[in-house]
Image 1 (cartoon, helix red, strand yellow):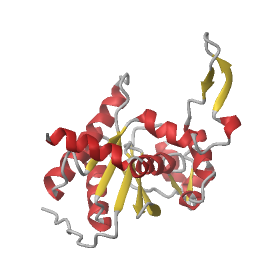
Image 2 (cartoon, one colour):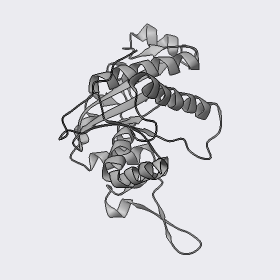
Image 3 (cartoon, rainbow, N blue to C red):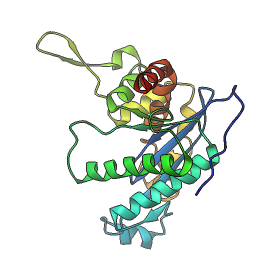
Length: 234
């Protein structure tokens, strides 16, 4: 069983935001509200298109290629656990599952989400309600949208009631939102999976912003989460 270090320094708070996925699982560490480190864990399937071409080309392989989704979940969970032991956060925040999401990919993401939550609780003794925080996809997009210039927070489309539609915040928008902050350095050293640069540089460019805003949402709304926890204790 891994040992979690109990931090007695009350003036330090470490929070981790995790955007969990099988291909690029991004984690961002915040210390007293400011991001200080990040890491991305990778897996891939050797049956995917162009896998042999990538090997023949001499591309740098980050993470592991594992055929079974169950094996991928196990590997990512293990890497996350080792990182949490290293960072020793007080709170770990993950993105919740989309309410209407269906399909095989969503099932695999659900498996990874519950695997990480269960291992953090059983092996490192994190309290399910107090220490392990779930941030919804809507909350993540909302806080990211607020960082964009005002003219980019809405679409040039209106509802039937004449209300301007919100920017749905796709991956590229979340990246831009992070680039609008003083913490854009988190993206340094990472690239997009579709670029040739990914042969020599880790992918995760589109995943780090989500992990950042997952942690950021908790940090900016701690009182709300604490009230929910106290209410459950009553």
